Amino acid sequence: MAAQFGRRVVKGAATTAVAAVAVAALSASQAPGVTDTGQGRQNTGSQPSSDPDADNSATGNSPYYTDLPPLNSPTPSPSTGTGTPTGTGEAEAGIPATVLDAYKKAEAALGESKPGCNLPWQLLAAIGKVESGQARGGRVDANGTTISPILGPVLNGNGFARITDTDGGAYDGDTTHDRAVGPMQFIPSTWEWSGRDGNGDGKKDPNNIYDAALAAGGYLCRFGWDLSDKADLRRAILSYNNSTHYLNTVLSWLEYYRKGTHEVPDGTGTLPSGRSDDNNGSGSSPTPTPPSTTPPSSTPGGGGSTSPSPKPPTTTPPPSTPPTTPAPPTPTETVDHLEDAGTAKLTATAGDAFAERIATRTETEAGKAVAKVRVRFTIVGDTDSVFTGGESVATVVTNSSGVATAPALKAGEKTGDFTVRATVVGRAVSGLDYKATVTARQADALARTSDTALTCVASGEFANQVEVKATYKGAAADGVAATATLIKSADDATANDKGPYFKDADGKTVRTLAGLKTDANGLLKLPKLYADDTAGTFLLRITTTGGATLTVELKVTAAAASPSPSAS
Image (cartoon, rainbow, N blue to C red; front, side):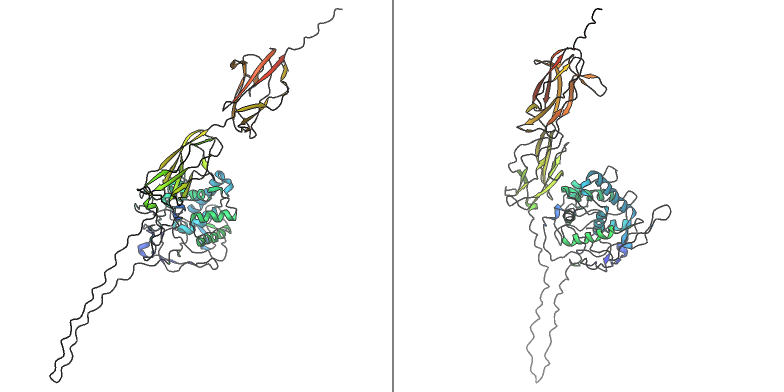
């Protein structure tokens, strides 16, 4: 979640029934330009929480802004003349110019790369509002990078999830725990695989609104989700931050922005006030006060009697602060290494699913299995193979046996080897690599689809085209590469220099066709064949990847002799 903008005077409404108008009072120590620590109010009495869902979300389930939009719809002002239009409607409907541009460009990019996702830019705006107040009201430079870092609370388990450092402090400056970073509040372990370069500067920077908006769009569009579908929309938002209240807050802003919005200058956007962690306490407990010592009181003397001497008062020492009990280690923190859990050889034909799935076990130093640990599987190398759902990264929680099984792999069209790397999320232990191989599509049999004889008169053309069907283990072999060659003889597979031939695009004679491919039904129809003036029996040989071969006989008959003129 984004850092605080100032002392919270008015908290946002906690339910979508009524929208509250929030006011942020900025103090001098929290003036614009000061790096926002964003530690928020933490509950000192809360127990550390590993929150197993946190490191599989975009934000680590960090706190977020709870302000709701006004009840009345925004009214964007019409553009007057040239230049950038400015809005005169509700202040909350105004989105800083650079931030708005980043959202719209992300929508356009995802519209091309994942058109089935149907990502609306208003959803990015809704999440950006809830996560960082539109990059703190649009405090970004000309390139879209925030003027100062936007950091969420330290995820140390004290009132929040506990996620130990995954980036060496590269993004969040913290080498002990992770923190959500940037205007869209990505935790470093999520940014590692979801980061994008949205402004074309060659860098993937979570502090840049163009990069962060495109990454957020890609994150919301994974698993083949269609955001025009209500169920998929809910799943996507909850995967960003797993909270029903967060879901409802984002949906309320999505609906608000869909009704209209307008552009405002950078740095002038309204700042939210209420935060989801406002009930987490407001600091440390009061320091105990030592009891006072009552001075001895003498009893007034009388009748010559003397009162017994009072006992010296008992002074109770001030209670010492009880020792802090170290937090028990999370399952992730006990992992020492990864072991293969019986993964078989990973081989698949291009376009097919791998029959085997990768299984990895997390273990302690003593070799004991560790359950409830996030294992991330990442596809590495020059390949277009993906996991189910079209993603190159998948995170799975280990079961009671300490085993995480990756989603099924789907081979792409690129053949060769690639690697799937298993790593522990939130733990710096050596990864475990699995080699996977994609082989070319193949056929083991070829057959003609017709038994019609293929004949032609010399210098003519064959009436019928050659069509064959390729199969592999009895099933149609689609997308199989094939070559057709008019050969010299059954024992000599070199191309013939006479007899039947094909024509290329320029009408020139060719007797070898390479780069052919069977269709979805395993069928391959060759171009039309022609004959030169040589009569005889000729052979056409078709071969495919995988070794399937078929030799077809072609007959060319001599042209009929012209009748000689009769004697007069």
